[in-house]
Length: 184
Image 1 (cartoon, one colour):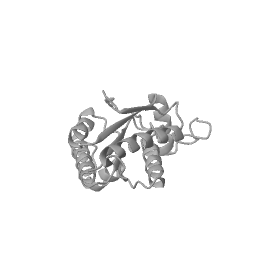
Image 2: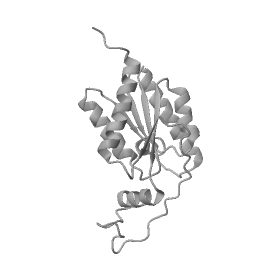
Image 3: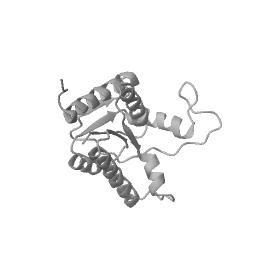
Image 4: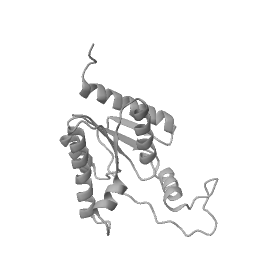
């Protein structure tokens, strides 16, 4: 048995950057972690997406099942998925024996700017709109914040390095919890 850390937050809050940074930092400490990223699983399971609630339900349940199977097999897991419905993350908490949820917080306008810059390349250096670009789609997400996160990180305030360090400390604590005390 191992552990699962689910990193959640609004689109643009820094989930992917944080998840990848934490996985790399843990690898440098000799802990190999499987990273499950929502977009990759979504594309794999839904080759012709319509963005329906049913599609999202299936993909999030698949994320929970994958994380549980890996954890039960002794593989530590970091899940990078907004999972805007709290019920999906609560399902993971109930299903996975050693689970922690990391809630990223960030003002929606900051997340929107980040997301537009990343997804559509529409933000010019300095933060204004890039000349000659159309208005991006609005980033409206009905996101339900966690009622009991194991760790909350305000990504508009903390640097990525501090955030990665906090997730690594959480992971090391979970790792000790499932590994037991060191043997002499």
